[in-house]
Length: 358
Image (cartoon, rainbow, N blue to C red; front, side, top):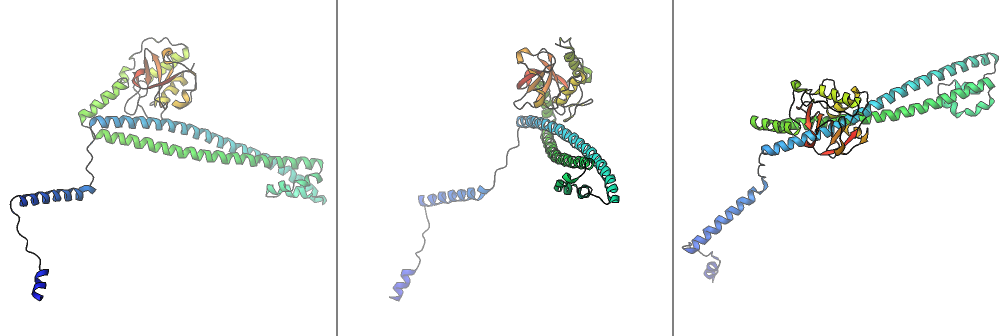
């Protein structure tokens, strides 16, 4: 029985596979190995293929456009910061003037108080007005009824000056907060512009010399070619401008052809798109706001079919680009970094509207 039990628990001997059974087992083993290999490598992401030259060019175009959008926001924040700075300075001047008047009134009251003190009749209201804390006087204004006529007038004047100074300082605090917010926006937009332009340069550096030259030629073609300083007379046929001011603006823009695009620049040696149109109309005696999205509201809207030389022409849905129409379907504009001020067809960019300034 013991021997029988030992034989019952003994592992049966494996017989080697032969023929079709052996081939089937080998096939299953190979399939299992392949499956195990695919599971092992599932966590490793395949390397992304390098972008094609066409994809690089498209992304560079988007970055340049995004940089121009950020530039116009930067220009707007800069203008608002300048306005807030002027307001803060004006309020500081007003507070200084009112404080000087307050000090004059307190001096006059002090002279009166000296006389009263000598006579032993110094009024409690005068004591409050001469306190180092003007708010104490405001809380004790009921003493006015006990003051004499002259003293009454001085005390009322002091109370009025203190109240006005308090309001001016409150407004100054609000403008200071507004200025700080605009300066924060400036930093944000400046960083966005620099980042996008740097990314565009890095992408362009991945192209071969021939591919980059092809991109520049295509970009030049989209923005009207690349007239240099020697080509400033290009397209300078007599322009039948609707007014002398429009003719002056166009003449200025012609004189800017070939000057470099620099974001945030308003001349005289470099321009961005809205900086050029602002400077051109300034030369004609007309003050335009700084940004594309405010310039479009600076005059009467005109349909594309009725464009006249001197009109401002705007592009893209966000109103992020502007040029100066010169007739014949052409405009003068500052295209983008690396592309100087030039003449270009109006139909090379998505048209968004037009404005007649004067």
